[in-house]
Length: 112
Image (cartoon, rainbow, N blue to C red; front, side, top):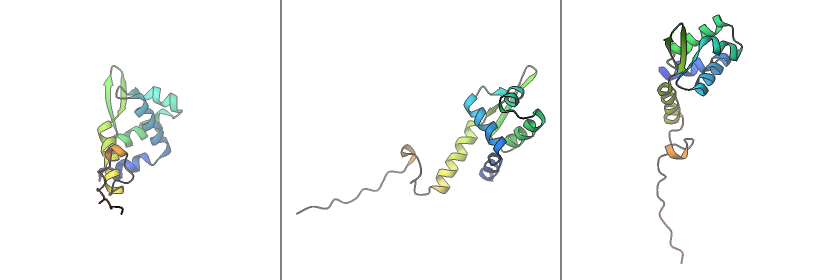
């Protein structure tokens, strides 16, 4: 199941830090070397974490010149958040107001 794999990938401190940094960077992404430097992670260790995030479908990569740029897969992230809302917030109580189903209308009681 994709949600379990994605949550598992994000359950490691370093992978979560990598993913958070990529989210803040946006769809343009960033080179692995720059990411390693900013987060203070050794390049081989970062490669391991990026591969794990890629297998989970949370990160995409593309070659640009001699560098490989990594970026978050926003659709995958939105699908994961949607899964959590749908499966963990079945009644919509914990969803943001814009995503909540409309509240049932209550019958008005007349006051005499």
